[in-house]
Image 1 (tube, rainbow, N blue to C red):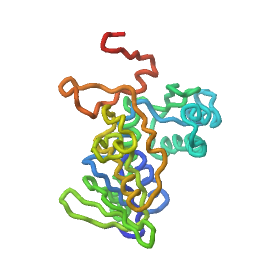
Image 2 (cartoon, rainbow, N blue to C red; image 1 turned 90 degrees about the horizontal axis):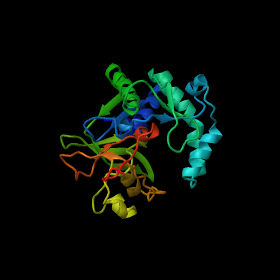
Image 3 (cartoon, one colour; image 1 turned 60 degrees about the vertical axis):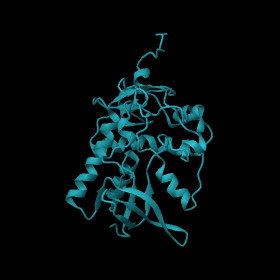
Length: 283
């Protein structure tokens, strides 16, 4: 059980563990729950890197970039929420530096990938940067949970089902563990459950907001069913732009199961370094 002094993080991907580690760094306590057997989420699949402007790596390598240029690139791709773009961009450089400083991560290599006017996609010498970055955060939180279990709890195979409210405010989470037991945890709640790209149910979020995409496969993990969004809506939260679903253009087909809806991600890095896309006729 979480005490009211704990922050409850729902979701164990990069966003969830970034939130958890930030709380821990600032002296708080954390309960993190994730419905999957292993943490990592979609972030662990990222094989291209993480974007940031005005980072130490860029300065060291002599790359000319600016927040304004990064913001302009983002606006060209989607200009509906300039205030969100500005916030993301202004924090991007410090976020990359934070990963290097606090988790001893190698983000010394840069690439210029699609949609960018400068080399700002950071990765290290490890082959899979998303996995490397996410697992470093997981390991940090796990180390704290072992050394100071009263400060950090991580529970896998725990599905959050409802947000607990009191007088119109969210005060906790109800979740079910792998043994079927229902638990209630109280404290501030951070929802970091990701999107709904794998929600193929007839009454799911894809069917509601983008039924035209139901026929497509996805590179999202099977866990991406919009649980956090659904829980938020159930207690009166507003939503925005749920119809804007990004479709990743490349995935790897398993010859033994070609009709499987969940495909293995074929990374943007393949195209960013000159990979060619061919159709069935080799054109």
